[in-house]
Image (cartoon, rainbow, N blue to C red):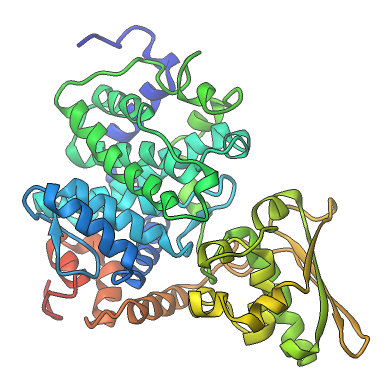
Length: 459
């Protein structure tokens, strides 16, 4: 099926392929491994939180008749599916609440598309936790570096970058877990380039999650095809008619290859304290600060002005018609923060979104561009019914790299999500097993526990 030996160092796919195939597990530092575990703990919690949601049940119902032998766990569910179907469903679930991790430079949610296929493969083939952890690190690195090379123009054109770049991360991680050579991994990435899709216009709908599910499933598919000898064009990613130029501006190829194996994007990963668009977190923090400092209630609010950069308004200045709109709404985020002093899953649920009192409070919120504020920052000015003017500015939101969530906060978030999803298993045991993932000889006991079907002491 052709050779790619000539001039391979000139192709980013070749560089990435060799990196994924050859980077030694022992060269991944304890700090890197720990951050990978944080990412996976957050991922599992997010998936557990929606295990009984109708969207997850619908995906299972659609896929089950076409699934092969049930060799892989659906997180939080008794059903078992084949590896590709389980990858799809678990990626959809992890991304569903807009509560998953975020690589801020690209706004990629790295773990949702990358973790599900390697978990399914490892469960199917009896692979170890250390192998999974290392494959995840390499896949997430590839995903975020490719995202860096096309940002911000790629997202601005309307491509949903978690889905479009997630398929590369999934392909790379699966290739490592399958033991593919550098050239086979290069081909897997090229095959993934033909499957990279997902549009921003679909963010307020379930179609967004379909794109992320496809990224996970298609990445596994690409690696399996490459294992069997399928080849791709050498420059499928960066060529004149390749993925990067077709879906964006001139790619910055150095962002993919420079410092590979030395400077790690996964160390820039962040975790959300609120289940909504990351650009809204500073808005929520500012509103919560004002409420707490001045003892405000919803009845005290006459008007609210939220100011931020153009990205904040482009994503969040919208009419709210359903809970998905609410998760990317400046107006709803401010309203629930003032009304409840909280912005958790309940505050973005349909009953709250449709509450006439919250809708009335949303109408008091106005959004304006402030070019002086950087991406991720926000200012909130409140006019009270008593005539006071109050203002708060948040430059770095909770959960950002400057104000990261601690391990204990991630554990609490995991436990909250597990309860939300009706999980009846041993939450503390699950948390412990994720922290000790690299000691596990097999993923099967952990995944059995994640289904809610395993014994609490397994493993």
